[in-house]
Length: 184
Image (cartoon, rainbow, N blue to C red; front, side):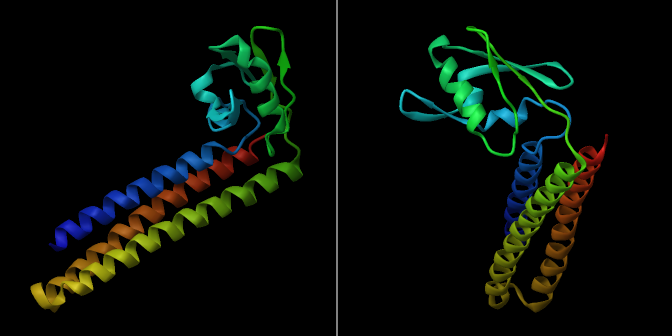
């Protein structure tokens, strides 16, 4: 029973860490990254659709992305969605069949803003892991009458170690992203 609670908590914490890494990848750096564009929602025939489902994204140069829509009729909608996306600061160019996006150089002030944004996302991920820990601890406390106090105390100790390891993973990913953002 305790092992089930810990396994469930570990699975949920792994998902929280992956979600944090995914969130970090959506914050742009000086380089072009197709991951930045994956979540942009395009109004495709009245339905908000992620750009990754409407076009192929290719990183042609360090600061350039080429977007090739599967349906040429969606070209203008894709271009407009990219232009309207806040925090990207890009101006796409449309040549009738593909869209080219060149990422501008980041200023020092903008880099610091992105670091603050990433730190906020990292704190959100740590809070998510702590919430999972709290729920698992409540589940362990509910088992006290069935398995005994010593077993629950051992399970709580294991839960703390599990929580610490996942928070460390988030912190490591955060440090890598901060270094990437501040790299010139």
